[in-house]
Length: 319
Image 1: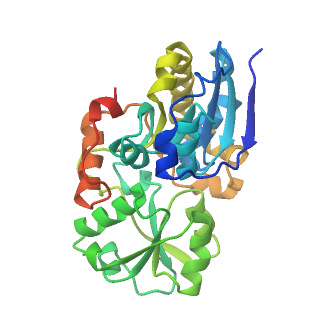
Image 2 (image 1 turned 30 degrees about the vertical axis):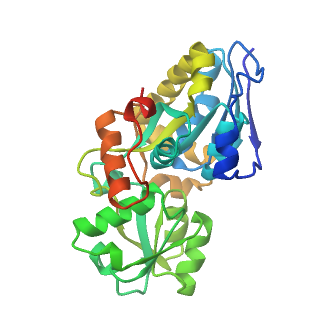
């Protein structure tokens, strides 16, 4: 009988030197054979297919024993390298940056990609409701809060500003966690924030914070936003189990994409949303495919904004 368990993990963030010094994977350390995996996620809308695969029995159908651990993004990279987890649900830019720094990570599956319309974009630029900011170009010269200064959200707001005629080089960007953004906006310590669901819906609920723009026009070519990643050693050590995960995850993405009403009804049981919020929350664009062209678009933007010094090896990043 297959089982899936969830735990909240407190995994320390390793320094780059410590990470680089780790040379073994969970599989090499003698992890359970025959379909056991652990995956690190942050319980936000982009990671919902992992939770769907659990709740709807897609992992079980593949004979997988999966442990889902709540681990913040930077710590998840360290957890992959140390063998604490086998897989991680991460921002595509986080994985690209890690590979650019020489870490042996690779994309196992796509998760979410950039949206084609404003209505299907979950990345939101939020401002105080009483501010005079009416469009993205009005953000020039202001203080913008974003979680991780080299994150994909930071890339997206910079590109969105350029697309609307703004100048992000005139802005101050400050690092602030998603849960703390609403209070920072209300106190005036930041002028705008780049957030994702379910935090956007929570901020909008009391009317003191409003949306001024989204990031759907940030890249000319559709680019990955979120991916499932692993170390190269983990994939090589147990390709059959990783492939079983891919099938289960793809089935979960299909489940999410096939019936929006059903997905919205399920969301309050999966992430921190009320049924009322779930009815109107902006849904991510789920997609398991990651193309090298799409990743190249993302990497080019990372180099342009000096998030990384040079592009990673795309053949290693997206095998």
